[in-house]
Image (cartoon, rainbow, N blue to C red):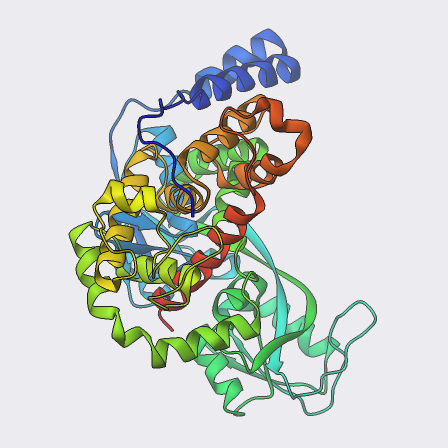
Length: 466
């Protein structure tokens, strides 16, 4: 971790002007003058401030909440839609996807956001909104279980293979096709158990393997090191937002916005927040972390919670940073001179008021205070997960070097506040061909990228419920 003077001037963001200019060029070139005027009129944010009630389930791919910080793949997508169209959102969590659908049918919520597949939303009472994701189905088994696959990695027709699948993950047509393609495979269907529960049953040998979409599989696979993806299936699984049958205008409005957002790359940027770090940690990293959770976390957990509460942070975030920095070793010291659990530099320690960097209580308190300071520096209109990535990058490489990377991103035509863009620019801080562009000099730019992904990985391991 590095620290730059807090007196540095904040570089003004040009994000809004760049987006407006870019859209103007796009629509003029594609539609001509009249088409551009029509498109701008259609895309103008609504002046109404209607509230939309969203039925959802708690989970990293749908909706999570800490104090006022809300995040999740589906949450972020709807948040961007609402910002553009002038809606306010109220998220209501339910226990299951089926309950979300029931509340939709009863008119208690207007939008269903619970990773709902098309075959669940096509009823007389419901209407499919836009499709926001399409995932390949994968076969996950125990590592010591042998599965035959084709040269392309797809499953072969293995006799008497016991395979379990959640009904949500495979619709009637897909199941019928699967049974035709794999006639000797014994397919067990479930509709109540969660994906983590099916993973647990597979680990305990109730089944040989299980089927789920790739993104959800990788999200939870980190908690089951004895399992691994063995094969892919040919089928894809699209996911939709769902609205009530009487909300045709809302479905059309959402579909229009999502199509436009996809063309601009916004959907990809949002998805990247939740997938980019999924495979960052190796099996060895995860195993070592889980051992440390059992053997070392208790020594510092009370202080993690106390300091995090004081600065309104998730305590797991502070703990994840400390683990990545020092593996929870209070006397850790690097060759660059940073010390302690939170690996504070001398300047950072002085700024936040830490006298003894090797004192674990002071180090945790100082690190939490510094994280809060950095989080508050990020634009308030960014989603939490985006602000978090920028905060962690600044914690590692320093505010000034991060500012250099953001300025360079603008020059390269990228969004300086998008982690998807910024993580490709940060490594250029170590490229001599860009040194003349850097106000604060070169830096090891790949390190903050790795730091962000690893911290997010450890943070997920402590916060995702299974």
